[in-house]
Image (cartoon, rainbow, N blue to C red):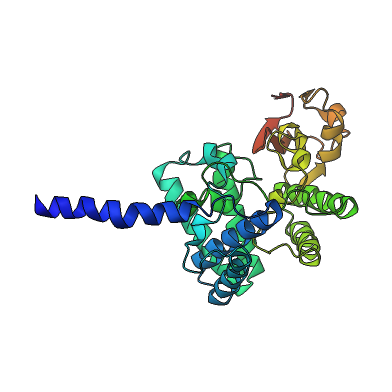
Length: 311
């Protein structure tokens, strides 16, 4: 009983006053300074997860500078000053994976972080492809940041996050970034590593030029109408690759099939006339198709004489 009483007194005389003292710092910063502080705080969390000690210290110095300007004691926890909540927009996608797929995804994510630190671009692309395969299997848009789906980062993706990087770029720079972002998505969908790396490099150049940290996800910078999961880049029917033929004789009919798409659907009989010729006379041919529908990459193999119908 005495121990219980002592604990209650501790709460009353120590813990509660401390909590009240911390609460007084919420809302003290100006809007601009709050956005700056929240940015430093989020980057501080990210750098702590990746054990980047130099950047951790750098972010702490910046947060301390802001706190000193508002006479906030340096011993005040940073989360007491940062805006409450975090990246709630992605909460709907967490917990969607099976236990095995979540374990696989977490492994890919950790290796991706390691390869980024080592600047091993080939392996970075490989891990991104593996994570995206899991995401597509569960209909998770490719614009969702990898970190938002990894188990160890869920605590930093709660509700109410205000993105400090939206509208950070001037109109001309924003238009360039959006163009690179679209082409980056296209490169990912086509598995075009050269295009993917090229667009990633251009986006990062824009980010460096405008003092945007490298770890900020691209979709946090792209315009909302470009980055949103329900944009045309995720709902349109897109023919990624298509060949028609048999044996070692095939014709590329990708552009031809894309031209036949009407009202976001495709219905065509597979024959020499519709495919634009006979690449393998006297042989039974097959249409081999890879396409994207509602953000998911799919494949189809239609024999000559059959009908291709999407959806």
